[in-house]
Image (cartoon, rainbow over all chains, first blue to last red; front, side, top):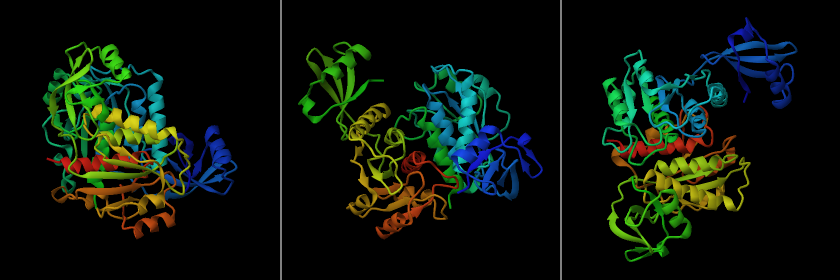
Length: 237
Length: 237
Protein backbone atom coordinates (compact mmCIF):
# COMPACT_ATOMS: atom_id res chain seq x y z
CA UNK A 1 0.00 0.00 0.00
CA UNK A 2 1.48 3.33 -1.02
CA UNK A 3 1.41 6.21 1.43
CA UNK A 4 -0.98 9.04 0.49
CA UNK A 5 -0.79 12.77 1.06
CA UNK A 6 -2.83 15.78 0.03
CA UNK A 7 -1.06 18.52 -1.95
CA UNK A 8 -2.29 21.97 -3.01
CA UNK A 9 -2.36 22.95 -6.69
CA UNK A 10 0.58 25.30 -6.09
CA UNK A 11 2.77 22.35 -5.12
CA UNK A 12 2.51 20.79 -8.59
CA UNK A 13 4.40 22.10 -11.65
CA UNK A 14 3.98 19.83 -14.67
CA UNK A 15 5.37 16.50 -13.49
CA UNK A 16 7.23 17.94 -10.48
CA UNK A 17 5.85 17.98 -6.92
CA UNK A 18 7.29 20.43 -4.39
CA UNK A 19 6.97 18.94 -0.92
CA UNK A 20 6.36 21.01 2.19
CA UNK A 21 9.03 20.50 4.87
CA UNK A 22 6.61 18.60 7.16
CA UNK A 23 5.54 16.34 4.26
CA UNK A 24 9.17 15.61 3.31
CA UNK A 25 10.00 14.92 6.95
CA UNK A 26 7.02 12.57 7.26
CA UNK A 27 7.80 10.63 4.06
CA UNK A 28 11.49 10.20 4.88
CA UNK A 29 11.48 9.83 8.67
CA UNK A 30 8.11 8.26 9.52
CA UNK A 31 7.07 6.32 6.39
CA UNK A 32 10.84 5.78 5.78
CA UNK A 33 10.84 6.23 2.00
CA UNK A 34 14.12 6.64 0.13
CA UNK A 35 14.75 8.39 -3.19
CA UNK A 36 13.22 6.36 -6.01
CA UNK A 37 10.40 4.96 -3.87
CA UNK A 38 6.78 5.88 -4.54
CA UNK A 39 3.89 7.56 -2.76
CA UNK A 40 0.51 8.88 -3.89
CA UNK A 41 -0.27 12.60 -4.05
CA UNK A 42 -3.90 13.71 -4.26
CA UNK A 43 -5.22 17.23 -4.82
CA UNK A 44 -8.46 16.61 -2.93
CA UNK A 45 -10.50 17.45 -6.03
CA UNK A 46 -10.53 14.07 -7.72
CA UNK A 47 -6.97 13.83 -9.10
CA UNK A 48 -4.27 11.48 -7.86
CA UNK A 49 -0.75 10.72 -9.01
CA UNK A 50 1.82 8.10 -8.26
CA UNK A 51 4.94 10.06 -7.37
CA UNK A 52 8.57 9.00 -7.01
CA UNK A 53 10.54 10.63 -4.21
CA UNK A 54 13.59 12.56 -5.51
CA UNK A 55 16.28 14.70 -3.90
CA UNK A 56 14.34 17.85 -4.88
CA UNK A 57 10.78 16.64 -4.07
CA UNK A 58 8.84 14.25 -6.27
CA UNK A 59 8.33 13.30 -9.90
CA UNK A 60 4.95 12.16 -11.16
CA UNK A 61 5.29 8.76 -12.82
CA UNK A 62 1.62 7.93 -13.37
CA UNK A 63 -1.83 9.51 -13.19
CA UNK A 64 -4.33 7.44 -11.22
CA UNK A 65 -7.99 6.70 -11.82
CA UNK A 66 -10.49 7.74 -9.17
CA UNK A 67 -13.02 4.95 -8.68
CA UNK A 68 -13.80 5.63 -5.02
CA UNK A 69 -16.53 8.25 -5.30
CA UNK A 70 -20.25 7.66 -4.88
CA UNK A 71 -22.44 8.27 -7.95
CA UNK A 72 -24.47 10.70 -5.79
CA UNK A 73 -23.25 13.94 -4.22
CA UNK A 74 -24.36 14.08 -0.61
CA UNK A 75 -24.49 17.35 1.34
CA UNK A 76 -24.94 16.85 5.08
CA UNK A 77 -26.10 19.71 7.28
CA UNK A 78 -25.28 18.68 10.81
CA UNK A 79 -26.34 20.51 13.97
CA UNK A 80 -23.13 20.61 15.98
CA UNK A 81 -23.06 18.03 18.79
CA UNK A 82 -21.44 18.83 22.12
CA UNK A 83 -17.77 18.16 22.81
CA UNK A 84 -15.61 16.93 19.96
CA UNK A 85 -18.42 14.91 18.37
CA UNK A 86 -18.15 16.72 15.03
CA UNK A 87 -14.58 15.38 14.68
CA UNK A 88 -15.98 11.84 14.58
CA UNK A 89 -18.68 12.91 12.11
CA UNK A 90 -16.08 14.41 9.74
CA UNK A 91 -13.89 11.32 9.97
CA UNK A 92 -16.59 8.67 9.51
CA UNK A 93 -18.73 10.44 6.89
CA UNK A 94 -15.61 11.18 4.81
CA UNK A 95 -14.84 7.46 4.81
CA UNK A 96 -18.42 6.78 3.78
CA UNK A 97 -18.26 9.17 0.81
CA UNK A 98 -19.84 12.50 1.84
CA UNK A 99 -19.31 15.44 -0.56
CA UNK A 100 -20.02 18.47 1.61
CA UNK A 101 -20.47 19.04 5.34
CA UNK A 102 -22.27 22.09 6.74
CA UNK A 103 -21.89 22.48 10.52
CA UNK A 104 -25.11 24.04 11.76
CA UNK A 105 -25.98 26.09 14.84
CA UNK A 106 -29.56 25.17 15.72
CA UNK A 107 -31.70 26.65 18.49
CA UNK A 108 -30.68 23.86 20.87
CA UNK A 109 -26.99 23.74 19.91
CA UNK A 110 -24.89 24.22 23.04
CA UNK A 111 -21.48 24.27 21.39
CA UNK A 112 -20.07 27.62 20.32
CA UNK A 113 -17.35 26.52 17.90
CA UNK A 114 -14.02 28.32 18.22
CA UNK A 115 -12.38 29.89 15.16
CA UNK A 116 -9.69 27.23 14.92
CA UNK A 117 -12.26 24.41 14.78
CA UNK A 118 -12.81 24.78 11.02
CA UNK A 119 -9.07 24.39 10.36
CA UNK A 120 -9.07 21.29 12.55
CA UNK A 121 -12.12 19.76 10.84
CA UNK A 122 -10.60 20.34 7.39
CA UNK A 123 -7.37 18.69 8.50
CA UNK A 124 -9.35 15.67 9.78
CA UNK A 125 -11.18 15.45 6.42
CA UNK A 126 -7.82 15.47 4.59
CA UNK A 127 -6.46 12.71 6.78
CA UNK A 128 -9.64 10.66 6.43
CA UNK A 129 -9.56 10.99 2.63
CA UNK A 130 -5.92 9.84 2.60
CA UNK A 131 -6.75 6.89 4.84
CA UNK A 132 -9.88 5.69 3.03
CA UNK A 133 -8.19 6.17 -0.39
CA UNK A 134 -10.43 8.88 -1.80
CA UNK A 135 -8.99 11.49 -4.20
CA UNK A 136 -11.59 14.04 -3.09
CA UNK A 137 -11.52 15.81 0.28
CA UNK A 138 -15.07 16.77 1.34
CA UNK A 139 -15.75 20.49 1.56
CA UNK A 140 -16.46 21.70 5.10
CA UNK A 141 -18.32 25.00 5.34
CA UNK A 142 -17.90 27.54 8.15
CA UNK A 143 -20.60 27.06 10.84
CA UNK A 144 -23.93 28.73 9.98
CA UNK A 145 -27.21 29.28 11.84
CA UNK A 146 -29.80 26.68 10.77
CA UNK A 147 -32.27 29.03 9.08
CA UNK A 148 -29.54 30.80 7.16
CA UNK A 149 -28.14 27.48 5.98
CA UNK A 150 -31.42 26.11 4.60
CA UNK A 151 -32.22 29.40 2.89
CA UNK A 152 -28.95 29.30 0.98
CA UNK A 153 -29.34 25.95 -0.79
CA UNK A 154 -29.43 26.79 -4.45
CA UNK A 155 -30.05 23.51 -6.21
CA UNK A 156 -33.39 21.73 -6.51
CA UNK A 157 -32.21 18.28 -5.51
CA UNK A 158 -34.16 16.19 -2.95
CA UNK A 159 -33.93 17.41 0.66
CA UNK A 160 -34.58 15.45 3.84
CA UNK A 161 -34.62 16.28 7.54
CA UNK A 162 -34.04 13.51 10.10
CA UNK A 163 -36.51 13.69 12.99
CA UNK A 164 -36.50 11.53 16.13
CA UNK A 165 -39.71 9.95 17.48
CA UNK A 166 -41.67 10.36 14.26
CA UNK A 167 -43.75 8.09 12.07
CA UNK A 168 -42.40 9.29 8.74
CA UNK A 169 -40.85 7.10 6.08
CA UNK A 170 -37.43 5.61 6.65
CA UNK A 171 -34.68 7.22 4.55
CA UNK A 172 -34.05 3.81 2.93
CA UNK A 173 -37.58 3.92 1.56
CA UNK A 174 -37.04 7.36 -0.01
CA UNK A 175 -34.08 6.32 -2.16
CA UNK A 176 -34.01 3.81 -5.00
CA UNK A 177 -30.66 2.46 -6.16
CA UNK A 178 -31.97 2.12 -9.72
CA UNK A 179 -32.99 5.78 -9.86
CA UNK A 180 -30.73 7.84 -7.60
CA UNK A 181 -30.70 11.63 -7.91
CA UNK A 182 -27.28 13.15 -8.68
CA UNK A 183 -27.44 15.27 -5.53
CA UNK A 184 -29.17 15.14 -2.18
CA UNK A 185 -29.19 17.27 0.98
CA UNK A 186 -29.91 15.85 4.45
CA UNK A 187 -30.13 17.70 7.77
CA UNK A 188 -29.60 16.11 11.20
CA UNK A 189 -30.32 17.66 14.60
CA UNK A 190 -28.45 17.99 17.86
CA UNK A 191 -29.17 16.72 21.38
CA UNK A 192 -32.71 17.78 22.24
CA UNK A 193 -33.88 17.67 18.63
CA UNK A 194 -35.46 20.38 16.52
CA UNK A 195 -37.75 23.12 17.78
CA UNK A 196 -41.21 23.19 16.21
CA UNK A 197 -40.24 26.39 14.43
CA UNK A 198 -37.10 24.87 12.93
CA UNK A 199 -38.95 21.81 11.69
CA UNK A 200 -41.67 23.97 10.13
CA UNK A 201 -39.08 26.18 8.43
CA UNK A 202 -37.39 23.11 6.98
CA UNK A 203 -40.71 21.82 5.66
CA UNK A 204 -41.41 25.27 4.19
CA UNK A 205 -38.09 24.96 2.36
CA UNK A 206 -39.11 21.62 0.85
CA UNK A 207 -37.36 19.33 3.32
CA UNK A 208 -39.14 15.99 3.72
CA UNK A 209 -39.10 14.59 7.30
CA UNK A 210 -37.68 11.08 7.56
CA UNK A 211 -36.95 8.58 10.33
CA UNK A 212 -33.73 6.66 10.93
CA UNK A 213 -35.40 3.89 12.94
CA UNK A 214 -37.09 3.29 16.29
CA UNK A 215 -34.23 4.14 18.63
CA UNK A 216 -33.04 7.64 19.50
CA UNK A 217 -29.71 8.19 17.76
CA UNK A 218 -27.20 10.65 19.16
CA UNK A 219 -26.27 13.67 17.07
CA UNK A 220 -22.96 11.95 16.24
CA UNK A 221 -24.51 8.65 15.14
CA UNK A 222 -27.28 9.98 12.87
CA UNK A 223 -25.11 11.47 10.07
CA UNK A 224 -22.84 8.40 10.09
CA UNK A 225 -25.87 6.10 9.79
CA UNK A 226 -27.18 8.22 6.91
CA UNK A 227 -23.92 8.00 4.95
CA UNK A 228 -23.63 4.25 5.62
CA UNK A 229 -27.10 3.84 4.16
CA UNK A 230 -26.64 6.08 1.12
CA UNK A 231 -23.27 4.58 0.22
CA UNK A 232 -24.74 1.08 0.44
CA UNK A 233 -27.70 2.01 -1.77
CA UNK A 234 -25.39 3.72 -4.28
CA UNK A 235 -22.80 0.92 -4.38
CA UNK A 236 -25.14 -2.04 -4.06
CA UNK A 237 -24.16 -4.76 -6.49
CA UNK B 1 -39.01 12.65 28.52
CA UNK B 2 -38.63 10.47 31.60
CA UNK B 3 -35.17 9.67 32.90
CA UNK B 4 -34.09 6.04 32.40
CA UNK B 5 -31.89 3.78 34.45
CA UNK B 6 -30.87 0.13 34.36
CA UNK B 7 -31.62 -2.02 37.43
CA UNK B 8 -30.62 -5.59 38.25
CA UNK B 9 -33.26 -8.24 38.94
CA UNK B 10 -32.30 -8.21 42.63
CA UNK B 11 -33.37 -4.56 42.89
CA UNK B 12 -37.02 -5.40 42.08
CA UNK B 13 -39.41 -7.00 44.59
CA UNK B 14 -42.98 -7.18 43.24
CA UNK B 15 -43.84 -3.53 42.62
CA UNK B 16 -41.01 -2.11 44.74
CA UNK B 17 -37.67 -0.95 43.36
CA UNK B 18 -34.68 -0.68 45.68
CA UNK B 19 -32.36 2.03 44.40
CA UNK B 20 -28.59 1.90 44.76
CA UNK B 21 -27.15 4.92 46.60
CA UNK B 22 -25.57 6.34 43.40
CA UNK B 23 -28.86 5.91 41.51
CA UNK B 24 -30.83 7.65 44.26
CA UNK B 25 -28.24 10.44 44.37
CA UNK B 26 -28.43 10.85 40.59
CA UNK B 27 -32.24 10.92 40.45
CA UNK B 28 -32.58 13.41 43.33
CA UNK B 29 -29.52 15.65 42.87
CA UNK B 30 -28.80 15.61 39.13
CA UNK B 31 -32.15 14.86 37.44
CA UNK B 32 -33.78 16.71 40.41
CA UNK B 33 -36.76 14.41 40.88
CA UNK B 34 -38.90 14.69 44.04
CA UNK B 35 -41.04 12.02 45.70
CA UNK B 36 -44.06 11.26 43.52
CA UNK B 37 -42.27 12.03 40.26
CA UNK B 38 -41.58 9.32 37.69
CA UNK B 39 -38.64 7.70 35.99
CA UNK B 40 -38.21 4.56 33.88
CA UNK B 41 -36.40 1.47 35.16
CA UNK B 42 -35.24 -1.16 32.65
CA UNK B 43 -33.74 -4.57 33.41
CA UNK B 44 -31.71 -4.67 30.20
CA UNK B 45 -33.49 -7.87 29.11
CA UNK B 46 -36.51 -6.36 27.45
CA UNK B 47 -38.61 -5.21 30.43
CA UNK B 48 -39.28 -1.62 31.39
CA UNK B 49 -41.41 -0.01 34.09
CA UNK B 50 -42.59 3.47 34.86
CA UNK B 51 -41.60 4.02 38.50
CA UNK B 52 -42.61 6.68 41.00
CA UNK B 53 -39.89 7.89 43.35
CA UNK B 54 -40.77 7.30 47.03
CA UNK B 55 -38.98 7.90 50.33
CA UNK B 56 -37.90 4.23 50.36
CA UNK B 57 -36.99 3.82 46.69
CA UNK B 58 -39.55 3.46 43.90
CA UNK B 59 -42.99 1.98 43.23
CA UNK B 60 -43.83 0.53 39.83
CA UNK B 61 -46.93 2.26 38.47
CA UNK B 62 -46.98 0.80 34.94
CA UNK B 63 -45.31 -1.84 32.83
CA UNK B 64 -44.06 -0.53 29.49
CA UNK B 65 -44.09 -2.08 26.03
CA UNK B 66 -40.78 -2.61 24.27
CA UNK B 67 -41.13 -1.59 20.64
CA UNK B 68 -37.52 -0.53 20.06
CA UNK B 69 -35.89 -3.84 19.13
CA UNK B 70 -34.99 -4.97 15.64
CA UNK B 71 -36.82 -8.06 14.30
CA UNK B 72 -33.36 -9.59 13.70
CA UNK B 73 -30.76 -10.48 16.33
CA UNK B 74 -27.37 -9.22 15.21
CA UNK B 75 -24.13 -10.58 16.68
CA UNK B 76 -21.09 -8.50 15.77
CA UNK B 77 -17.60 -9.92 16.15
CA UNK B 78 -15.28 -6.95 16.06
CA UNK B 79 -11.48 -7.11 15.90
CA UNK B 80 -10.44 -4.59 18.55
CA UNK B 81 -9.30 -1.28 17.07
CA UNK B 82 -6.46 0.66 18.65
CA UNK B 83 -6.99 3.25 21.37
CA UNK B 84 -10.49 3.67 22.74
CA UNK B 85 -12.18 2.92 19.41
CA UNK B 86 -14.21 0.04 20.81
CA UNK B 87 -15.96 2.49 23.17
CA UNK B 88 -17.41 4.27 20.13
CA UNK B 89 -18.39 0.95 18.56
CA UNK B 90 -20.28 -0.11 21.72
CA UNK B 91 -22.06 3.24 21.95
CA UNK B 92 -23.09 3.58 18.30
CA UNK B 93 -24.00 -0.05 17.58
CA UNK B 94 -26.11 -0.18 20.77
CA UNK B 95 -28.06 2.81 19.47
CA UNK B 96 -28.45 1.04 16.14
CA UNK B 97 -29.88 -2.11 17.72
CA UNK B 98 -27.06 -4.67 18.05
CA UNK B 99 -27.83 -7.77 20.21
CA UNK B 100 -24.37 -9.12 21.04
CA UNK B 101 -20.84 -7.79 20.70
CA UNK B 102 -17.78 -10.06 20.67
CA UNK B 103 -14.48 -8.18 20.96
CA UNK B 104 -11.95 -10.18 18.95
CA UNK B 105 -8.16 -10.43 19.07
CA UNK B 106 -7.05 -11.02 15.48
CA UNK B 107 -3.51 -11.66 14.25
CA UNK B 108 -3.04 -7.95 13.51
CA UNK B 109 -4.76 -6.60 16.63
CA UNK B 110 -2.34 -4.31 18.46
CA UNK B 111 -4.48 -3.61 21.51
CA UNK B 112 -4.10 -5.86 24.52
CA UNK B 113 -7.30 -5.01 26.41
CA UNK B 114 -6.91 -4.54 30.16
CA UNK B 115 -9.11 -6.47 32.60
CA UNK B 116 -11.21 -3.43 33.50
CA UNK B 117 -12.11 -2.74 29.85
CA UNK B 118 -14.99 -5.22 29.83
CA UNK B 119 -16.57 -3.52 32.84
CA UNK B 120 -16.19 -0.17 31.08
CA UNK B 121 -17.70 -1.43 27.80
CA UNK B 122 -20.69 -2.94 29.64
CA UNK B 123 -21.25 0.37 31.43
CA UNK B 124 -21.15 2.23 28.09
CA UNK B 125 -23.69 -0.25 26.66
CA UNK B 126 -26.01 0.38 29.64
CA UNK B 127 -25.77 4.13 29.20
CA UNK B 128 -26.32 3.87 25.45
CA UNK B 129 -29.42 1.69 25.96
CA UNK B 130 -30.81 4.22 28.45
CA UNK B 131 -30.12 7.09 26.05
CA UNK B 132 -31.53 5.49 22.89
CA UNK B 133 -34.57 4.18 24.81
CA UNK B 134 -34.00 0.45 24.41
CA UNK B 135 -35.11 -1.95 27.16
CA UNK B 136 -32.37 -4.40 26.22
CA UNK B 137 -28.69 -3.87 26.96
CA UNK B 138 -26.54 -5.70 24.38
CA UNK B 139 -24.42 -8.54 25.74
CA UNK B 140 -20.68 -7.88 25.52
CA UNK B 141 -18.48 -10.97 25.64
CA UNK B 142 -14.98 -11.08 27.14
CA UNK B 143 -12.32 -10.64 24.40
CA UNK B 144 -11.49 -13.86 22.54
CA UNK B 145 -8.92 -14.84 19.89
CA UNK B 146 -10.47 -14.80 16.41
CA UNK B 147 -10.24 -18.53 15.64
CA UNK B 148 -11.64 -19.46 19.02
CA UNK B 149 -14.55 -17.06 18.55
CA UNK B 150 -15.62 -18.38 15.15
CA UNK B 151 -15.33 -21.99 16.32
CA UNK B 152 -17.73 -21.34 19.17
CA UNK B 153 -20.74 -20.10 17.21
CA UNK B 154 -23.44 -22.63 17.84
CA UNK B 155 -26.36 -21.52 15.69
CA UNK B 156 -26.70 -22.02 11.94
CA UNK B 157 -27.77 -18.49 11.07
CA UNK B 158 -26.14 -16.60 8.15
CA UNK B 159 -22.55 -15.47 8.74
CA UNK B 160 -20.64 -12.75 6.94
CA UNK B 161 -17.09 -11.42 7.09
CA UNK B 162 -16.36 -7.84 5.95
CA UNK B 163 -13.27 -7.64 3.75
CA UNK B 164 -11.64 -4.45 2.41
CA UNK B 165 -10.53 -4.18 -1.24
CA UNK B 166 -12.62 -7.08 -2.47
CA UNK B 167 -15.09 -7.62 -5.27
CA UNK B 168 -17.63 -9.55 -3.25
CA UNK B 169 -21.30 -8.67 -2.91
CA UNK B 170 -22.29 -5.67 -0.81
CA UNK B 171 -23.93 -6.59 2.51
CA UNK B 172 -27.08 -4.73 1.37
CA UNK B 173 -27.39 -7.21 -1.48
CA UNK B 174 -27.22 -10.21 0.88
CA UNK B 175 -30.21 -9.19 3.01
CA UNK B 176 -33.82 -8.86 1.96
CA UNK B 177 -36.22 -6.92 4.16
CA UNK B 178 -39.10 -9.16 3.12
CA UNK B 179 -37.26 -12.31 4.16
CA UNK B 180 -34.87 -11.50 7.01
CA UNK B 181 -33.32 -14.31 9.04
CA UNK B 182 -34.02 -14.17 12.80
CA UNK B 183 -30.29 -14.10 13.55
CA UNK B 184 -27.12 -13.10 11.79
CA UNK B 185 -23.40 -12.97 12.67
CA UNK B 186 -20.98 -10.49 11.08
CA UNK B 187 -17.22 -10.18 11.64
CA UNK B 188 -15.19 -7.00 11.01
CA UNK B 189 -11.40 -6.66 10.98
CA UNK B 190 -8.88 -4.30 12.51
CA UNK B 191 -6.33 -1.91 10.98
CA UNK B 192 -4.31 -3.90 8.47
CA UNK B 193 -7.17 -6.26 7.67
CA UNK B 194 -7.31 -10.04 7.89
CA UNK B 195 -4.42 -12.41 7.31
CA UNK B 196 -4.94 -14.95 4.50
CA UNK B 197 -5.14 -17.67 7.12
CA UNK B 198 -7.86 -15.86 9.09
CA UNK B 199 -9.95 -15.24 6.00
CA UNK B 200 -9.64 -18.89 4.93
CA UNK B 201 -10.61 -20.08 8.43
CA UNK B 202 -13.67 -17.87 8.34
CA UNK B 203 -14.68 -19.23 4.93
CA UNK B 204 -14.13 -22.78 6.25
CA UNK B 205 -16.56 -21.92 9.04
CA UNK B 206 -19.22 -20.81 6.53
CA UNK B 207 -18.61 -17.07 6.65
CA UNK B 208 -19.47 -15.36 3.36
CA UNK B 209 -17.10 -12.49 2.41
CA UNK B 210 -18.86 -9.17 1.77
CA UNK B 211 -17.86 -5.62 0.89
CA UNK B 212 -18.99 -2.40 2.57
CA UNK B 213 -18.24 -0.19 -0.44
CA UNK B 214 -15.30 1.16 -2.39
CA UNK B 215 -13.54 3.14 0.31
CA UNK B 216 -11.39 1.68 3.09
CA UNK B 217 -13.36 1.98 6.33
CA UNK B 218 -11.57 2.18 9.65
CA UNK B 219 -12.11 -0.62 12.17
CA UNK B 220 -14.38 1.75 14.13
CA UNK B 221 -16.53 2.77 11.18
CA UNK B 222 -17.21 -0.68 9.67
CA UNK B 223 -19.37 -2.16 12.48
CA UNK B 224 -21.32 1.10 12.80
CA UNK B 225 -22.00 1.13 9.05
CA UNK B 226 -23.14 -2.50 9.23
CA UNK B 227 -25.63 -1.80 12.03
CA UNK B 228 -26.93 1.32 10.26
CA UNK B 229 -27.59 -0.79 7.21
CA UNK B 230 -29.20 -3.75 8.97
CA UNK B 231 -31.45 -1.56 11.12
CA UNK B 232 -32.59 0.32 8.01
CA UNK B 233 -33.36 -2.89 6.14
CA UNK B 234 -35.21 -4.31 9.17
CA UNK B 235 -37.20 -1.15 9.90
CA UNK B 236 -37.80 0.02 6.35
CA UNK B 237 -41.40 1.12 5.91
